[in-house]
Length: 510
Ligand code: HEM
Image 1 (cartoon, rainbow, N blue to C red):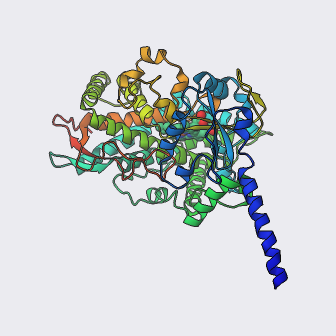
Image 2: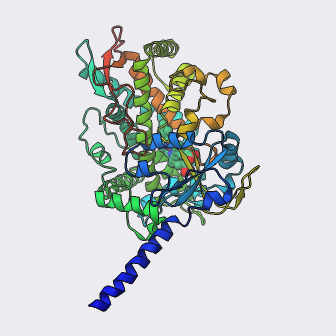
Image 3: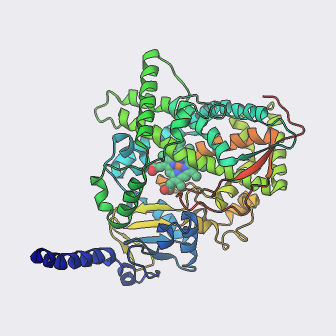
């Protein structure tokens, strides 16, 4: 017994020392390279406030950016992991565009996952990413998006008829905007990526909507394990069968894609949606010797479109509505443009009409500046890279981050950054600043593949909405809103509540 105790008296301190050594051995990384940094803390590095959920992800990114004012690059520690923050717009261009072949991948946690997750474009790497991206790129051309916009128009009309039925009082109806626009966006993605007509506005309990609502429901213990692995030993991830997504939901989505695909092939049905474009690519590649696509890859992308497009697009709509409610002059000016352009197009909100709306474009871009759904962009160094005009050489596997949220609030690029001013995005104003200080969709070959689709569908939603309805603050509106501390994507704590009113001269033509 004494022998056993003695053994533990020795083993335990040794284990603790090893644990401490492992947790801190990278902590001289930035000092040795002469990069400005904040001294790290054991376990937390520089992100203690975030790990303890004291601050939101967006606020932390902003704070870190502003703690290195005047620097072109800065060093941060996320847990024990050193990450290089690239602050200078010209260096951002080099990393994201010119020297992209050194930064092809994202530093993602690669758990042992099923093919419908491991094949998602967002986490694919190297040559495999390149070949899948090349196949998907033609599905996002303006021509394809234009034909898909017909599906978005159907959903827009459903949205208007839903609101017409709901709002019968002259003083309007208070609604949570994320939930409202979330249902519009879900219907758009269900239709375009899964070929499912779900009308979640009229029937929120419909099967597809009910499943989609549970997408991020994962048990607390799995969440904790993921967080610890992420901070301490990401190398372990590939041995663990964990996922950020609910397994039941994944099973459901997989079967929707499989069944739809089989039905379309068997019955010769065709539809103008992403799924059709992917099925066509799969069929045309079937007999090629070096085919890239297979059913798993198609399923993975359909699920990814839901994952990458749903929260982001509905967030943009929600915060745009918030800004329009707070800035009634801008709301009126936008509505004037909408009426003027739609009149030219016989009153119909179609793809071409929306493309002509310049002020709408400025409003949505200013909204994504102030409220970018994604707070930062990440890249992994894949080939040794000497950063020009510095003595820093990044080794393969090093992580680099682009501080989107900080750049969007930097007054040297956007004077009075808290002010909502769409005119910052007039052609003259845009020409005055680097494009690399505005990155809601990222940049370079690894940017958001769905950006054009997202812009088209969110703009159409706003046009349908603003034609007949207006938004204004109500008693439940929190100004300024508080950021949710539990979300990686931008989210307002307790939501964004606004009053929706039917306009007096509402056309009611739908
Ligand atoms: C307003 C809505 C959206 C925003 C703000 C947004 C933002 C982003 C951002 C910031 C990235 C990372 C870019 C980078 O690392 O440079 C990204 C990647 C991606 N997005 Fe979006 N996104 C939106 C909508 C969509 C939609 C609707 C789809 C699909 C239909 C989509 C599909 C993707 C995919 C597949 C990637 C990964 C691309 C790759 O790794 O090659 N996104 N998005």
